[in-house]
Length: 170
Image (cartoon, rainbow, N blue to C red):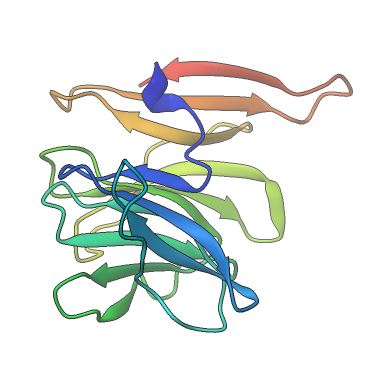
C-alpha cells in the first residue's frame, strides 16, 4: 500500500525524474531532479508557496497546490501555469491516476481544515464530483490500476480520543 503514503514533498514521474518542493528565496517552489540527484531544475518561480507536485501520466504536466489552497497545472513544454478549477478552494493532494484522463484531489471544507472529502474531475477541470461524503476526513486517495476502486485514508477527528486513521476502499 505504498501508494497510500502521504506524498510529502516528492512525486515520481514515469520517466524516472522526481518532482519535489524546495524552499527557494523564501517560498516553496517545485523542482525536478534525476533519481541519482543529478541536474536539479527549478520549474516554478513566484512568491507563492507551491507544494505536493504530481506528474501527469504522460509526464508532460505537473499538478501542484499552493498554500492558498489553489490547484495549478504546469505545462512543462511551455512553462505556463494555469489555475485549475477556479472557484474551488482548499484543495490539496492532487493525484493523476495512471492511464486515466482525470485528476483526484482532496478538498477541505471551508474554514474546517479537519474535514475533507475526495473529489475527481476531468483533466481540464470539467465535471468535478465529490466521491466521499462522510463526517470524517478522507484524503490520500489512490485509484486502482484498472480504475474499478479507490483506496483512501479516513480519519475520525471528532472523538475526544486521538484520531483514528483507517484505509478504506470505495
